[in-house]
Image (cartoon, rainbow, N blue to C red; front, top):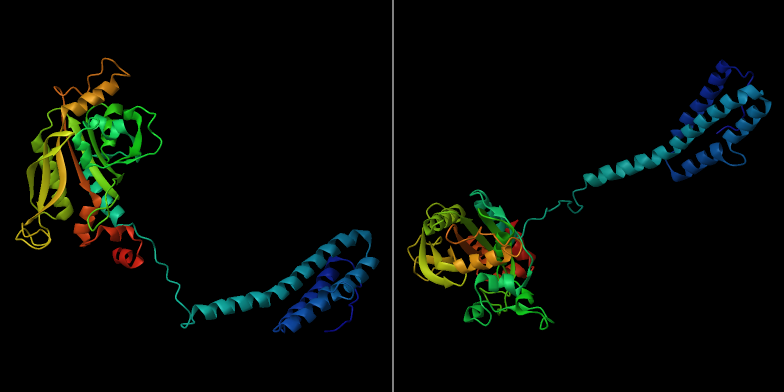
Length: 373
């Protein structure tokens, strides 16, 4: 690298162009040899050194003798030349990084970068599938709180205080509720039915809702029971709703979920909030109804409960609605009727996926969950 300072004989535009073109050519020629860190550092000191850098020496020599009107364009030219020098210094670093990335991209010995997207939990996927079936029938989704009052969870659903029917739903109580009236005491909801009451209090008929959600009961965990599980309930209230409508709705839903060959049958049962009530069985999806171990060789599997809404439930709703409008008569059982049903999401998921222990859904074992990816 030469230390010769070129002479500027004139300060007009052609002289500027020629002088700076010569300097720019020097920068380009020298930057081609910047293949090592040492060469880059020598190049930087040669051109940009604070005391003896070539750019500073030339700038001082030319600016000192330049007339005032030429100093501004000279300064601008020097700034442009400085940017060219800095870009020449940055180019080898960028090229090295690009080359390294390219080599890394084709190095087959490196670990793979495959991303595995998440999937819905099998319980959520089953819940969404059931809800979609009822959405196609014109139902909407309603949700409610998991911490409920005794009134919404029991009393309004025809579970009187101290009634034996409450024994079927052993309750997890919230602590420190003794000072409250019994109907206002809080608990973890044991079913999603409180949302039915909340919906009817807030909305006049017609009502067609499906209610998915998490529920809690004081049950010991085993292969088919869990203190936390999920339910999907449905409610339909309108004029002239009959048990035949209920049977047709559930028969269609079971066929949509398990296949068109599935059959349904209804057996008398008891639920405090429906009358008449029924248990629903479907023909075994594993053996086609011929009998196997999973259906206990009966050909049928019990899946859900249902029934016509008890007039006592409409009476509780009417009582609450009349606190706002004393003349409210929207849920007069002489004018309207309705049906309700409820099913466990875990039971359906276990059937659809052949899972034998409900605990697998809550274990967090990735080996189990990855099967559904």
